[in-house]
Image (cartoon, rainbow over all chains, first blue to last red; front, side, top):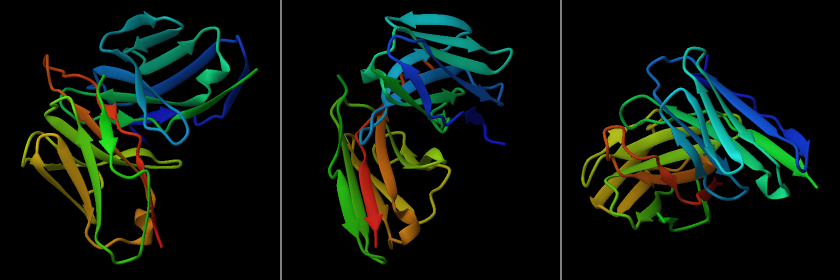
Length: 110
Length: 115
């Protein structure tokens, strides 16, 4: 079993819809939770970074962490075609090593 | 903004060649990382470096080595390239501040093909 599981998609939604992405993890030592967005032929760019259970909002993006269920989510409101990308969750315990999910490909159709 | 620059976007090499991938960051970050990214496998850590001349193996170091002679530069070396090392290689850097440290920032990757 992988340490971090993420549905690969693709997830196709119409423009304006809410995109809902999630990851599950198995290691209760994980404390820090990140979401990266990766456009085709580009490196991942950091979207959200949180280290506590609950919600964190940044513009159209909301990251949600439920440590008791070992479940994290990313919601994108009012999705745009420019949100079409692969979204990677990344989680770590104390220390340097990040563990990535496999990524979910999202396609927002105009 | 953090800038992580990888020297080549695309590279084609032959089996058995020694291959060098270069990465430079401009934010004086102490930590630097090399990953490879493959479909269905996600990002896997090859090596990372805490600071100049310091390195530590990641999850898949076999067939690779690294060099960090200066703080801003981290090189990945394929000692004798093989076809199973065809992949996207990503470099990242990070400043370990505040206990947990800051998140990693990535370059745009080098797509390496070994023929």
